[in-house]
Image (cartoon, rainbow, N blue to C red; front, top):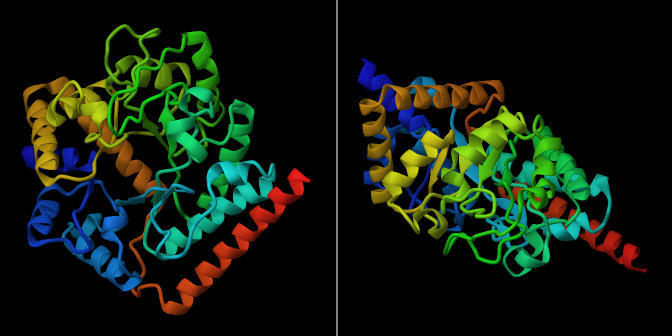
Length: 369
């Protein structure tokens, strides 16, 4: 019984991806065995509303009866270049374009429009918005994902965006702590080494301080900060950044999630197994492993083995699982509706999105005159 409980606790710590538009027999088998705390879908998983509905029902059918309602169904929809539903509903304006209007009404409306789309299609977690500062160093990498170099403006945008999501029953996630604004490399490919001092990083941290109560989830980056922490490791594996800064100094009490542990920034110096164990040891609650099934297996087995070996690590796993279950229960995350989104509903969503896009464009034109 104890081993079964530990396995379920370890499984709860994972948000995992699938390969295609259907869950294969193998995927259904390991979903049933691992009981992951969440699923993340990408463009490769999305074909039609009917297909997506069938995929959700298949995933739900693999889970224990008492866990069916309580799992995260995640997607990245920031707007602009990060928009998984572009082919489903239409393009969503970028965060930078909306923020440039200066309209708090439109900030909230963007969150609401995105939240409505996601809820209609069965999602309950949006891995957005971006809190990174729009600094010159990262402009080529971040582009329109970052809204401002001014932390005050970032907070204004994010407050309203989160409120819009929340009104539709969708949880948001602030990213990428402690900040990628000073980074010149894409952490998907390699680990950025951000040469900002502790004093400079106070601007990057300011949005997290201001929004520590409003953020349901914070995603930690795979960047290193050598002027602050001498160890050449990403923040995602750093107890200093997660426990000392985010938890103790800032006082954040929500969920801490890693960026995709398969990214180059995480795997540059260690295996997926070692990186995932290190991330949990550093204070991470949720591990994203988004692509390869073999890496999902390796990461799960490594975390489970470490929990079986170390009582202290097992306590960390149990505490993280408890935080996850508490959040899932508190935020009441129901299963997707019995029926898939109809053609009429999809048209309504597209119309609302187009109307919002037109308002953003009109507001931007007015601001430029």
